[in-house]
Image 1 (spheres, helix red, strand yellow):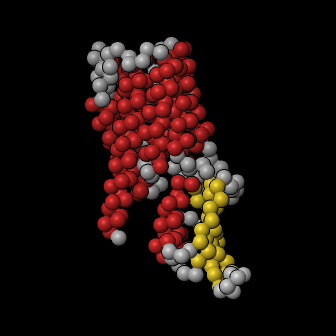
Image 2: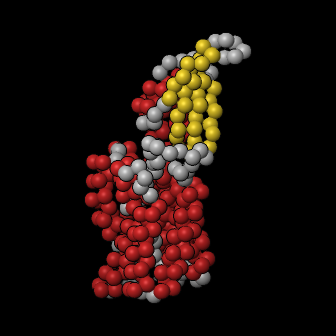
Image 3: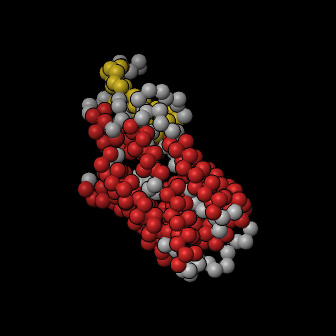
Length: 290
């Protein structure tokens, strides 16, 4: 059991590191060379980087945005540690630390690999969106807005993480339009749209799934509540054909939690029967998670 847990953790953190690498690769190779900016805290870091580079006349291919991003995330990491969860905090720390490393070591080309800004937006958005998507799927986050979004979503049940991102990015790209050029802001918005679409394709936190479990074993509901933090409704039923007593358990989870639920159920009862219904509309006290 301990060995399996170590293997799972290794896969999880390996995926988070790979996601951080793809995210930084897409930005440094395709977005920065054509003068565009990311959204969120990374975008703020890039704007500060540009202003500092211009003031200090640093080399164009020397990127300090990773270091700035790390410093800006420090108070947010403290918030994650105190108010969200240790698991989320650990995954986010790993992601941000490796983002800092990869932003610093992945050299920015002196000449853009792709001159066309729209094509760079598309390719960069696919690569960076894939990176953050697999990071979120592994239980980490890219930091910044993700941390604020999870914090406020836990505090206020009707809080919209998406609206928070739109508001913050509106200020960032408004700043780009004022400090630099309007086309830079417009293409940066296009890139962010591509990025968001890819993240949503990979990460399923917004797809609610109802799981109905039929079992003759006790304590599955306790394991779901303790290990996943999800509520479970229980009924006593019986098989119409066999006439045997059975337990019927119902819980609502996010799509990316399906594998975790299966493992919990089948570790206790390998003969359990489970039905999943995706895309359910849920109102009330249901916690959406990154």
